[in-house]
Image 1: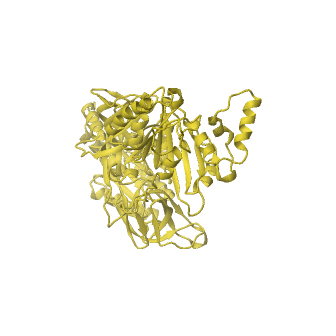
Image 2: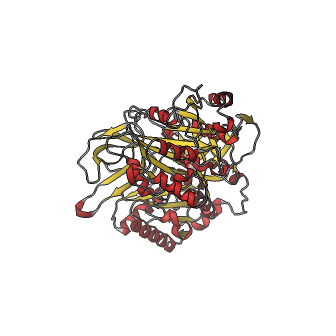
Image 3: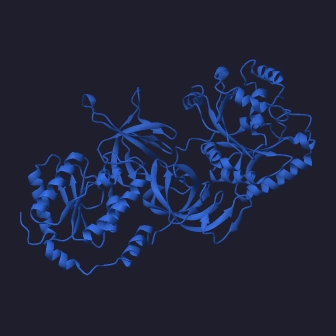
Amino acid sequence: MENTSPQKTETAARGAEGREQLSIVIVGHVDHGKSTIIGRLLADAGALPEGKLEDLRERCRKSAKPFEYAFLLDALKNEQTQGITIDTARCFFKTARRDYIINDAPGHIEFLKNMVTGAARAEAALLVIDAREGVQQNSRRHGYMVSMLGIRQVSVVVNKLDLMDYSEQAFEAIRSEYAEFLARLGVETVSFIPVSARNGVNIASRSDETPWYRGPTVLEQIESFVKPAAPTDLPLRMPVQDIYRFTEHDDDRRIVAGMVQTGSLAKGDEAIFQPSGKCSTIARIEGFNSSEQTQAIAGQATGVTLTTQIYIKPGELMCRADQRQPRIGTQLRANLFWMGKSPMVVGRPYRLRIGAARVQVNLAAILNVLDASELSTVQGKGQVDRHDVAECVLETVRPIAFDLHNEIETNGRFVIVDNYEISGCGVILEQVEARTSMLHEHVIRREFAWDKGNVDRGERQARFNHKGRFIVFTGPTGNARHELAKRLEQHLFRKHCNTYYLGIGNVFEDLDADEPTRSVSRDEHVQQLGDLARIMTDAGLLLITTLAGVDDYDLERLKLLNEPNQLFIVNVGENIFSHFPVDVQLPDGADTRDAINVVIRELNTREVLLDYCI
């Protein structure tokens, strides 16, 4: 199922101003009756537009097609009257108490990723089981996914009980089996409800067909679900979605925008951005076409301006300096549910999304694989196959900020993208202290297999009268970087140095952009550039290039990849690095000749240029 009308559904999802709103996901094995339950619930709760049910019955009669309440989902598509809107993914309706969003998650095993999408933001769940077919593998998989996503309010609806003559024994058998399974997952159900959606038994009203049942109807159950309190008492977590800059009318604001996941923030709070560790104070909480605000809380999309302008990138996590900080690292132990068409294998790059962060990730190790339908462990698997649940170690190419799932759920969940498709999801169980990294292992393997020629480094230095170096120009002003780098190459070449300017955009387009992309290819390109620099500097070259949008971690990776040769960093304009040392810092707009002389002087001091003078 897919959402075909996002603007319309978002409008409906907001509900009446001041009314409580609850999001429910309904899941179950294919053909167990989810759509029929939704249709019957809308009809029996009086939530349908006037005359819609009679109109549908008449259309079915004219087409000689038996009427089904499941047809209401198609018939009501795009309706917006009487407070109800239904699209192909979500249904919006209201009762006297509050507004509801019901996410109808596909039941077929091939669409488990759609089920995850529907359940990700749900606050309660209805799990549907066919009384005749009983608990199926997908019933168990859905139960596992509900537990993994941290949904605490779960009601199991045993449907089609009319096909079992409303047998209490049949209902109790399913309740006993499935309750025991969910208990092993740590999921405590709030109710088991015997229903016949087709006949309206126990949907919105009680029925004489089940005199032995004393529990709530489906409508009573969803009305009794508790709206979880906004997690304002937790530490602040606001993923940075973007940074907006304004230039008209002398407006120099840089607004850091995002959604507050947990906690709260206020004007005057000291903010720290992780994993970079950069700090500033909140000067103002911004709003579009609204009065000035002094506070933003969990669940609110907002923007802030800072007293001190600092260079941060989308994907960072804004926290409060006076509260518990997230964990920072590159290796984590996680439970992962894999839905990709191809198996997940060790060493292959994927993309991890957590909060607003997008980073390349590798499967470092598989600890064990769990059969989600039976909760049995499979040892020794060398890959994670489709529909497997794996306890594994993941390694990102750069540090990320995260929390454990049992501490802050929203910042302890992630998804993994493979070939532009969401192929996995999971929760973080533990931070792993990294003794080594896949990048270090790559360098070790490369150096071990390095086939040296008969010309050693000393001979090259004597011939060229300089050492090999990778000279990187960084900084926020692209034209200045490029011009200085090219002039340096020209100057050194005319002094008979073996030098080359690498126009980085000729080889790695996204590394030359002042507004870098967030694709995995950028991280891959950094590694490829580092390996290329290792070859060129080993050949004795003074390799010169420019890089845009890099951070401390990019330079740390380039430094490691270029070893045993060294990196030489020239930063032009604002120094955007937190801890990586810059060899030469040049002011923005510096005279070209003076700037080149400063760089040459430092290369002399570092004994990169041998017996050289300006």
